[in-house]
Image (cartoon, rainbow, N blue to C red):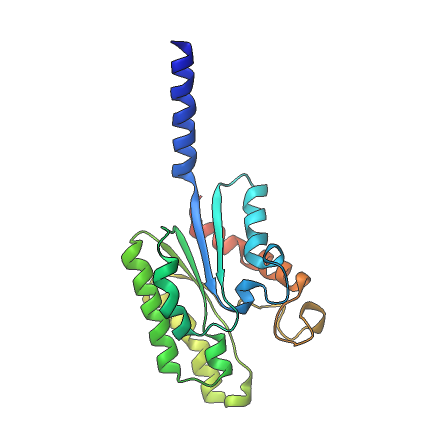
Length: 204
């Protein structure tokens, strides 16, 4: 009798742990992927470590792909959404801007990605990572590009990270030799800067 009762208790605890577990997907480009580094050194993995240190139960999936554009992200999002998600962090658009692609298309693609996420996961918490582009494409393009992310956040009741690379971009000590992608120390700063946002979105 006691053996059966113990088994039932352990099963209940296991089910409760699974129910309390949050799934967080970071969907982005080379910044999310940790270009030039291992996946373990990229900021999503560092955030996972921070959750673990606080005793918070979550599964973090790094769905970053180097060179990804908003159109590329839209083409693969259905495959990513085969797994239910509690928090979806969208980090795309920078490659569109660097290539000077039409901003209307970028914004439309990002909105379509968000729409697909919402349909599959109605209770999902959305986090949008803002990015910036160099001013070589003109002040108007640069300004309108930067406005895409807060506009999307407002329209979709999403939490906004104003600039993912705040405190990292432009600092040669925190980036690889290409001056674009964060190095190990740069990713540590990104993770530290945005952890509180991701934690709040996770609703622990």
